[in-house]
Image 1 (cartoon, rainbow, N blue to C red):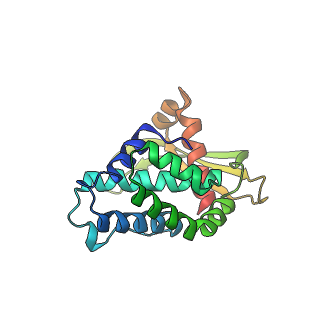
Image 2 (cartoon, rainbow, N blue to C red):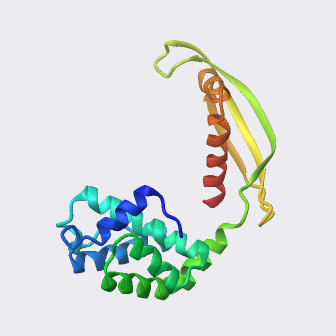
Length: 195
């Protein structure tokens, strides 16, 4: 399993008993699994009130990244233990992480399987130009706005959700100068499909 440098740093903080007590570690681990498996699973837990918010944020992100990567690769206990040992977690914390992972493994694999294998792709674009003459305060605006509708198709589900948004001429030109526009559109389409 490979984790980013930020996630590895967060995992090292997870293993530091000076930063996270055993109770705080267990609470953070439960919160991370809850955050991954439930749409609005928060980190609110009285055991975590004494933890520095910056450390808590990085540790939660690292735990979530490790959980998702393990689920994506269908990692077994040995692979997960090896990854956590590289991040300097002690044997007890590794065992606790692996136990919690095994307990939630089926739900995690089901969640990851429901996302699909391929992102949606754009099949059609329709647009129109709306010209705004006055603002709501009756000031003159003379501002053109483009209303775009992207028709997408997801090859896994066959669903064809439409994504509509508006942008000004400046936003359209700024996005067209690089790959930013394409990446932004793909992210917007993906978010809309996941909803």
